[in-house]
Length: 198
Image (cartoon, rainbow, N blue to C red; front, side, top):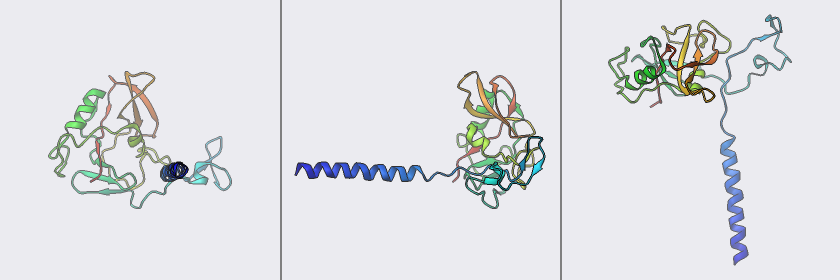
């Protein structure tokens, strides 16, 4: 009886590991949006056989449409499920601590919102969420074609993520060219609140 119990525990352990590894392999990162290939001089070339991002197109394909304007001051990203404030320039530029406060106190009735949202539902996006908006094929702004954000600024936007090497800095993304960088938390950058999908 004891051997059967041991075999059962081993079988359960193996089953559990196989089940967990199956779930771990199910996440697929999205594509970058890049479909053009370039040589060292920056000239566009045929992509076939180059091994470049524009040739391989790895990752999950973007949904069509990528964004849905909810007609209430919000936009849903159909790739991530996140809901973004449509007005990407409601707060202008602020230092990091003020940006965090502006995002978390945002509520319906402000910034063109008619969605009934309340303070605490909105927040500053983390660096991964903010960078997920970037289309690597575009610039000025570095957003997918046909995006519904009329007030995106060609400048840096704050994320809520601190830069671990220099904790007095936070990660930022330039919506001009998609460049990811970090900046001192006392610098001023734009604020673009987000909230989870319903």
